[in-house]
Length: 433
Image 1 (spheres, one colour):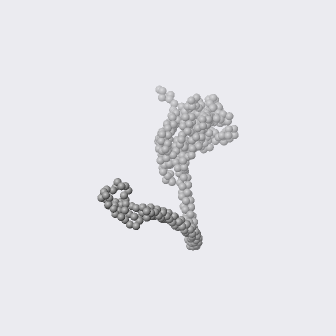
Image 2 (image 1 turned 30 degrees about the vertical axis):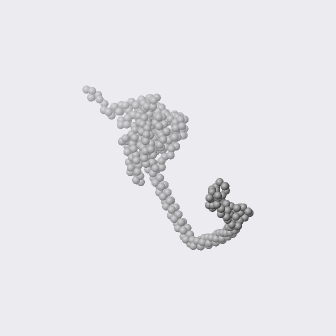
Image 3 (image 1 turned 60 degrees about the vertical axis):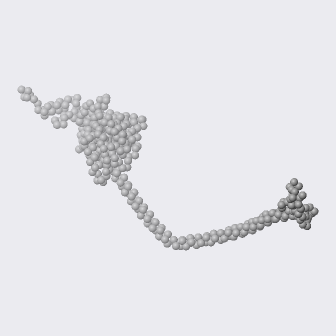
């Protein structure tokens, strides 16, 4: 039966391992690949070798390691030639042998490295993005924004339910200083092909209500370095670079670095490091505020002490100053009084002379006014006396009266009328016939 010919899984793994180890084409061969998820643990260096297609998708991946007996030699050789340590994102040419383990599967043991083959494709893409942003004038725009001194209203872009987001919120809520933070999650896909578009959509939602937020944080927990490829994309990098609010990023582990780390206002190594940075900002602002309050209190105390001393001095000097001021005022008043007296005396003399002249002029005017009518009356009196009927009669004339009125015409007389004739020495009555 077929089961009599069946292999156990261990037997299959051993056959594969023997095939790999005995194949000369898989031993001591040079391989070009990009390094991903490089880490050192227990003296050994572990990593993944990856290869990408023309559109940037990972098309091949294999675990690799450099054992501690060769690690220091290879790192020294590589650093001497490139000035850099072996790290994630570099494209390298390494020599090694394929191996297969029953439990851990296929791997590649590196025994040598060619330093000439240094700049990895991931690093090249980042450099090209940064150069493009620099030429367009966007590279330093967000990085040059002033991070708020009291960042309490925080818009968070992260994957809902992600461990990194949970750690971030937990650290903010349970901060030892008891500071209050007001956060809101704008969910986004944080790995894979949809990362860029998802993060940009979240930024656009935040942009609609900029006044509600002090800053934006983009956080993602650890994972394979290849999972962070979505952050090394031009459109999301530009969206962060031109965003009007300060952006803080905490993506992956401390060893991970993306384009966003180079353009954001603040770069922290992990989500919890972002939380720590926010807490530190509030602590710094609180400490500065407390210090200012203390300075104000000290200044106020010193000012009060100085004022009390000044008031005491014033109280001591006040009587003498008042007396001096009174004496000066009395002297001044005396001088003013004398000045007023002299002025009034001069004014009185002037006014007296003026009144005397006015009186003289008035009297003279009155005399002139009364003399003229008196002379005129005297002249009239003389004229009346000269022209009076009695004087006319005395000169030889007579005056005939009829009923007490002078007769001016014979036509006024009638037969039988009695008339009186006035003469200088008497009167004669006659009857008209």
